[in-house]
Amino acid sequence: MSDNLGRIISTLLEGVPVTIQATLGGIALTIVLAFIAGLALLSKSRTVRVISRIYVEGFRGTSEMVQLFWLYFVLPALVGLQIVPLFAGILVLGLNHGAYGAEIVRGAVQSVPKAQYEGAVALSLGPFDRMRRVILPQAVVEMLPPFNNLFIQLLKSTALLYFISAHEITQKGEELRPALPMGDLTVIYAVELIIYLLLAIIITVVMRALERAGARRLGRKPPPRSKVFSSATAGGV
Amino acid sequence: MSEPYSSPSSDVMIQFDRVVKKFGDHVVLRELDFSVKPGEFVTLIGPSGSGKTTILRLLMTLETADDGTIQVGGEYLSHMERGGKLVPADERHLRNQRKRIGMVFQQFNLFPNMKVLQNVTEAPVRALGLSKAEAEQRARELLEMVGLSDKIDAHPMQLSGGQQQRVAIARALAMRPQVLLLDEVTSALDPELVAGVLAVLKEIARTTDITFLCVTHEMQFAQDVSDRVMMFDQGQVIEDAPPEQLFTQPAHERTRSFLHAVIDRAV
Image 1 (cartoon, chains in turn cyan, blue):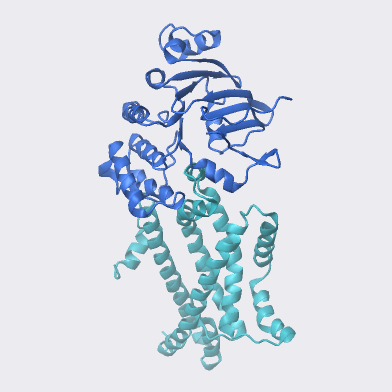
Image 2 (cartoon, helix red, strand yellow; image 1 turned 180 degrees about the vertical axis):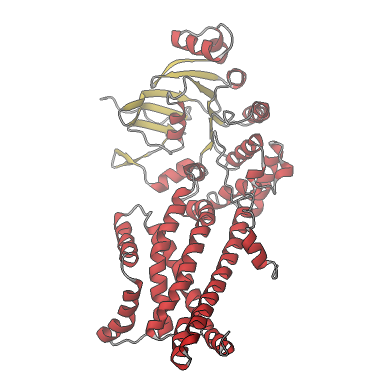
């Protein structure tokens, strides 16, 4: 075992706050954009649908890293506005994953049985109430598992922020590398993987809790606790 | 099609005037005419897939007619008069029309994200503008009437089909509709739960002045509760008579063979 393990862990942990900030900021922006763009994809207006489709395909179909470089390097050169690395990161993570999320929202809304819409029409509920009070509360429960996936991907994408020198986990690791002997490389990257894994498990635990709450709200049997996570949460619950 | 569509009149609650409905090439309603008087209980019978449910769905504005007009309470349902011409109605007009019409569905269509009480209060609060307290009081009375006072805090999914359907009936009544559409409301129920739902409906028909249009395969119920029964086949009403007459001495051969097929006795 490396003599430098303590130093490696403490340095990498210094990157955790920025990684968490970027993840939470990215998730918040993802949710907002996913709902706006996802509902826009279902709009009666062709124009609205086309605009949303352009956003979704544009951000889903181009490289996240190149988007980041555009925002951080090209845009300042064009308009003279330099963005703080963390904000640039949140913006790109949110815009990118929001595009994926839009399809999750659209799919979940469409998966709510048509009978629910008809029941709401028969009760004279208007289009806004139909969506907000009847369709969306049911659709949101369906969105949770795919959003869990998306948020974990977003977490892992925060490593891209290394390229614009945000002080997150990966960047801390690269900073550490030249200062330590070659033999410690394995340790650095192993610790990095473990930190990402632990953060991903936290996301999953939270999302599973939301899934169970959602199932209860719909009067369904909550999904069974999986063995892996019941042991992971056993200490905290 | 040169004569004008009949003008609204007050002694008619529902008026179909040469209504045509097609699904692709399949003509479901062929210039269908019929009317229902205020407070009447009218049952539609006929072969499965003949378009009986389509008639109810047109009235609930869940489908639009390809031709002809429908009036409810003397007002055009899916049309508006503009500059002396009839044009398709906008969402606002439709929403106002829907307030007078309620529907109970074969599959109940309760909202699973709301508990029983909220299923009944939601639309009166949101669509009629009742206060929450008023809506809850009305909901409690209705749920008591359908025998579900003890299920107020249950999730719809925890109820039997018969209980769910009785909640759906209370929910429709909470809107105080002038017209109530019943779309095969017992077809999805286990046999032992049918009687409870039908008893509730009989009681409502007896004690209110709501106009009913009912599609059902429960011939005994139709006979007991209807003022009039219409035999519907191939896009048209082929026989229209009081139940005692239609069920015992059907005039039309097709009515006779249909009744023979659905009722286990010679008619």
